[in-house]
Image 1 (cartoon, rainbow, N blue to C red):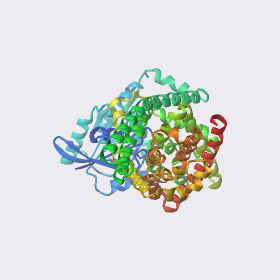
Image 2 (image 1 turned 120 degrees about the vertical axis):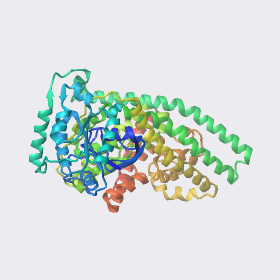
Image 3 (image 1 turned 60 degrees about the vertical axis):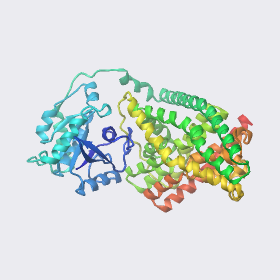
Image 4 (image 1 turned 180 degrees about the vertical axis):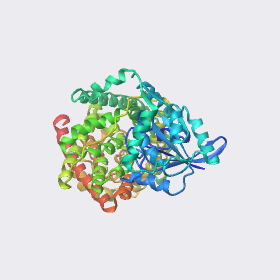
Length: 570
C-alpha cells in the first residue's frame, strides 16, 4: 500500500512524516521547504507500507513546479490512499485543497492538525460534522507531539483494504471560485470562534516585527547566537586538536620517518579525520541546534519578513528571501526551493542570490579562522556584510535583468515552543549528511593533498591559482585548499592547515589574511552539490553564469574586506 501525504505549505505534513518515518524530510515554516517528494517505508499494525511526503501545494492547478510535482504524482495512479493534512487554524483556506482532492475519487482521510493551536486561539471545530459533509473520516492531530498519529494511519490502512472512504454522492467537481466559496461555507458550518486566550506570544510580534526594535532584536539575537556557537566550539576545538596532533606524531614516529610516503599519507588521513572532529563539528552542531530552535519557534519567517522589508528598498527580489533564509542551513535546498517561483527569470535571480548565503559548511571557515583568531564580533560582521553584499547583488541583477520585483507574500506562523526531540532529529539529519557525504571527502582530500605534496604536484595547482591568491594577498599555498573547497566548503579549511604545514593558522597567516581568505570562501563558486542542483533546476548555462558571478562577487568582497581589515587590524 502506498500512502501519500498531501497538504498546503506549513500545515505540518513533513513534521508528521518525520514522526513516523524518522527524520528524512526538511521541515520549516516556509512555503516550498518540501520541493520534491520524499518516501519511506513504515510499519502499520505489523505490516510494511510505503509513505510519500508530497510537496506542499495550495491547489492541483500546477501554477508552479511544486504544484505540478504533486499533480503529476497523484495523477499517476501510484497512490492507494491520500491523507490530507489540514491546518486547523486555517480551515477555509485548507478545505479549498480538500475539495479539489475529493474530485480525484481516491480513498482518502483527513488529518486535522495543530488542534492545540486551534484551541489556544479559541476555535471550536466539529470534526464529526465535517465527516458527514465530506463523507470522509476526520482525525484530530498534534503532529509535533505525535498525538493522534496511530489512529490516523490505522484508518488509512483500513481505507485501502475496504475502500470505504471514497467520496460517494457529493459532486464537488466545480470551478475554482465555486470551490473557494464552498470551502468558506463548510468552514463556517463546522467552526465556531470562542474566546481567544491571550498570552505572551500574542504581544511578542509588537517588538520583534517593529520597524525599529525588530532590527535591534535581530542583531541582539544574532550576537548572542554567535557568542554561544563560538563559546561552545572554541572550548571543544583546542583540546581535540591537541589530542589528534599528539596522536599523529606518535603514529608517524613509531611507523616510519617523517619524510616517507607512508608517513605523509597517514598524516593526511589523520588530518582529514581530525578536521571533522576538531574544526567542523564543534561549530556545526551548536549552529544547527540554534538554527533549529529559531526555525521551529517561528522566528526565522519573521527574520525573512524583516529582511524583505529592508532589502526590497535596495532592489532585492522579494521572493528570493525564502531561499535566502534556507541557504543558512544548506545551499542545495535553497536552490531547489526556487522551483516554487513561477517565472524562470525569478528562479535564476533567487538561485544566484541564495548561493551567496554562508551555509553551515562555510560556518566552519568563519568560526575556525575569524571567530577563533579575531573574535566573534568579526564573525558576526561577516554575516552582516554578507547581507549587504546579497542586497547589493540583488540590486545589480535586477538592473541587468529588468523585473517588477514583486514583494514577498509569506505566512507568519504562530510562535511555538520547540520540542527537544524535533530539534535533535533536525540536527542529526544535517550532521549525518556531513558524516556520510562530506567527511569521507575531507579524508580523501587530505590524502590526495598528502600525495600531491610528496610528489610536488600541489605547486602546479598553487601556480595556476596564483593570480587570485596574489591579488588577495594570500599565501600561494592557499590555492589548493580553495580549489578543493569547490567539492565541499569544509575542505577549504581542513586542507588549509595541511597545505600550510602548521598546527596553528596564526603561525602562517596574518589576521588580515585570515579575514580575506574567509570572505572569499563565503562568496566564491558554490560547492559541487549546489552546482549540480543549479544545473538540474536552471540548466548548464545558468549554472556557469551563476558560478562566474559568484567568483566576481567573491573577489570584490574579499578585496573590500581586506581594505577594511587593514584599517582596523593592520
